[in-house]
Length: 398
Ligand code: PMP
Image (tube, rainbow, N blue to C red; front, top):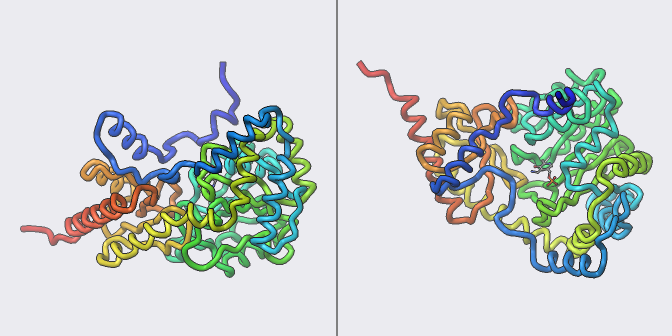
């Protein structure tokens, strides 16, 4: 028996870019210590008071089916937070609670794209994007953001492919580049979206991790709220990755339609997880800042280490828990550099190529180990890059 073409094609065949990560995991299992700077997960666990709220809710009986679009309290808390952060009037009816941001990304594409529709996304991209779009039955179409533009997607690149497309998925603060879209970038996106009547799916799961400038939500730009679905999540902002709680914010009719989809797919998110999430949101900005603080600190540390050398260039690290490093001066591809670094120094980073062709010659470093180990690994990485560059630039002998 064969499964559907849709499910067989989710990853599009070929490499999914996780080879270095998997090799690192194998080395660890075989007993070799590896400094893992690969995946985007905090080195702290969910805070005890949040777990206590979860426990209290479960013991209090919130273990049956919860309301499919989300509890009234959590939808209201998300709506209030979004309104406070963006100034856009937002009601609980504009919010659907989902099992994490990933499920929200999938549902948002189901809500906007019919089978065979062209769905745009920006390269470099979070690794699941093309598969999520394929899973929803649409056809993924990458639009490159260039290193020379510090990976801000440009209006002309979008214009070149927008005709006939239905949706555009953007992500700011960005994984993997760490770039925060500026106003000019967002205005360019708005202009193209209006001109070509595109839905914009705006992945803002890193909106509490801003190190430079400020986060602008495209939903707050002139006249955009009617065509924007914002994806949010408790995962990164509240260190609740395993709780699987996220949301979509959008026009009421789309949220009503998405509730219907949820009734036929997830049937909602566990009530005790939603209660813990409401509690965590109630802890306010100070708690979110506490969760983000280690990344801010490590970014400062990284900037001082990287300032002392000139082989590795830091792409402006304005937000999110990653650093994108341009290692083209070494003459190696991101994949070759990452493999060699793992082999020689037992440090695992993600090749830029894992996140699309536009990030070739780069590596992504997750700032997710404690400061001292992080600083030491980054120092070793720079020394290794210098050695590679030296070999590359050595004059031919004889
Ligand atoms: N979007 C981006 C850009 C991400 O990096 C991630 C997780 N790494 C997600 C969405 C999904 O996160 P979650 O499903 O845990 O909310």
